[in-house]
Amino acid sequence: MTNGDDNFPNGPLELPGEPEITSVSQRATKSGFSKKRIALVIFGLVILASIGFGAALLFGKENAPEAPAATTQNIDNNQAGSSENDVPAVTSTKTFKADFPRIEFTYPGNWVANANSEQEGVRIESPEFSYTSINGGTIKGNFRIYIRQGARQQDSTYIGRGIAIRQSEKLVYVNPPPGQRPETNLSFFGLDTSDNFAFFMIAGNFSLEKDQSLGPEYGKEAETYIITGGYSSTELSDDLATNQVPLDYFQTTNAYKQAIDILKSLKLL
Image 1 (tube, one colour):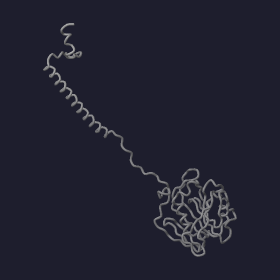
Image 2 (cartoon, one colour):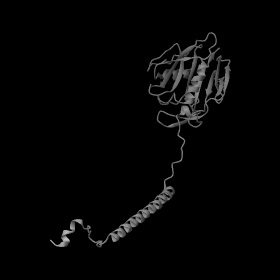
Image 3 (cartoon, rainbow, N blue to C red):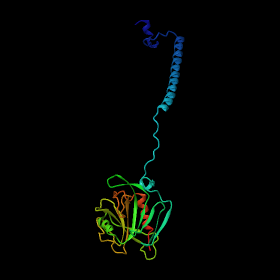
Image 4 (tube, one colour):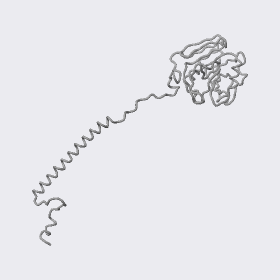
């Protein structure tokens, strides 16, 4: 081995491509230069990162997709009170009193109540609104209540075609006069089938099960009250004529609920 080989373990490690460092001062100079260079590189990277971050914020904000505009959801008819899809909520009420049939009831101020002298009955109609038919379409019409004493021949035809869609329910009168029963049976009918809703009817002592019928002879006695209602329209001129609606829909509208409240206020004088 040569003398140079004897100094190898204690000599500087030479990396390929770097000049040989021959003195302590030269090593210090190189080390100082390296530290400055590293500091400059780091500083430069920080500057570039800052510029990039700022640009990202600027252009990202300019090019970001706009948030979707707030939309008004069509709420369930019975909650919305929309004059298009349902009748509005009740803000005022009126009282109607007829001499024949001798009745009195309270109804919403935007409904119309008329005594039909020709038919000897009373028709109560909601404002016009849109409702769903059994085929999924929309009908522009109203909810109609019809009250009279003694069934006409055509009334018996509608009643006879009515098939109970479920068991009758109790309807409790709000403030019945002396002599009037405090509650009655309210029955729900489809027309010729129990698969749709055509009309409801106060059936007095008769409590029906699903698929039962009152029959065409019901109500022909002069003292019997015919009190019925359903979804109708101006095209349906007959008082008991209605449009059929789905079973899961007919009780959801404000119109239906307000009609039930009218029945609850009914006084038979």
